[in-house]
Length: 319
Ligand SMILES: [Zn+2]
Image: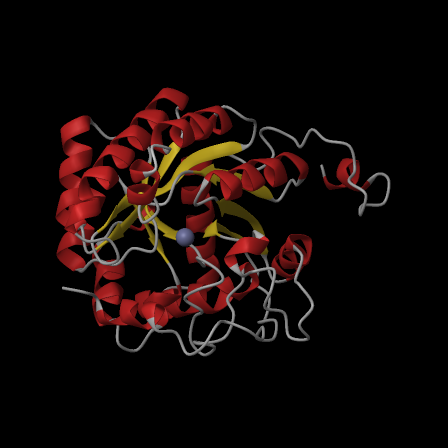
């Protein structure tokens, strides 16, 4: 069965455009542990006036409302390389690298899967790359004929996470049972995150019992997603992470408009309200959970000269 709120993602209300206003800043900051700021995924193309929104503008807006860093996630070789390169330049960015499960059947068919996996392996060793993701299984958009390729790629990514001692960011769409079976069968890496968690309370408990993390996106604010809020309620708070998956899944009250890391406060406040807790307490907890999974954003300082757009001294100043 498809979770009803996810259908909205297949048939969005037109392409995301027009960014919502800045929310009130968080008192205690958090990280967005799953976002796509690379121009090719749309985040760079949907600014109000038609001007591309540079990733640095995204990060500046985020910093101004208490979202102090992001994990920038690649979905193919090109965006994974971009993610690693930006992370190396920018103290507010850590990178995740992987081939998206919906792309791998075609890669396999063209005989390119092994070569692209080798590229991900190379990127995984770069500084400030802290996760393999997003990888997993997607039985919604890929039919039966693509499943062998998805399993093969997922297992290879799990292996890379273990080899490089990186977190694993899971994309699980209509494949809850199969994702868990695969992790159990081949052995899960130490730190596993279900990105944009989409299961119910029972599945949430199963995931949390294994010590894995559940990352909640804007979907947790959607009216038609009560199961997600139940999931949030039943798990230990030590398993909770937060993300945007920008430019998709914009939280209420801006559903349908473009998403960006600076909109996390809406999701955080909705989660805190649902849990009957203080937003600052929840933020502090999520920040400590996020650092337990990915390490600290300043463990490996950026190691690059200022780029052509940065005034001299910018990088030194930020460290
Ligand atoms: Zn994503």
